[in-house]
Length: 255
Image (cartoon, rainbow, N blue to C red; front, top):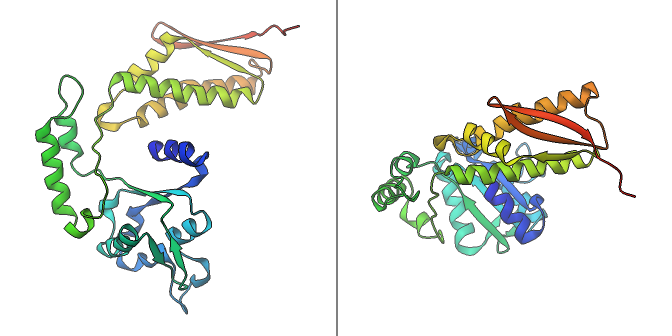
């Protein structure tokens, strides 16, 4: 999801040029019509489809189909037309052009092989990749796989990767605080502490994000409510006794 957001921002200058569809919502055969919209005479006909309407309104977009392996087989029949011709007809008979979209489909198939197959240099072994390919080949029909441009297998996040993500997330927090005229200074030791505490290879970056929320954002929010941190101040975050420490100081106004 973060990759799709970054790609949308890089290609189309905004994260808003991304539509995410959770395919676990399309496990039932009856739910498939929601992608392209209900046929005339059915409830919701005038609303349009979740997929077709998003692309019709915003042709330059990243389409993220999350956990594609959970979708009903009928979904793949719809996607075949999109991946082959770059267009799709919605429930109202309108042709929607997908030629300016990038379609990303994510899957957790074979994730256990990728985790177990990590080598000393952090890359995944060829055997593990072959196991995943076999699993993907069994899960999806050949005509569907044949229309996909590329299948990318992600290496599990290393500690260094998690530290970079921590820096990125903390920078975003600093931007939000700057809107309230508060600056944020996080020492390298604090960044390293967050990365180590939030590092769980099997769960990706989510444990780190939860840790930043509980260990940084929530304490800062409480300080703001108490009034101990105010506009015009700088908050310095350090580590002492294996705990994050917060210190607010007034930033001198430049003449």
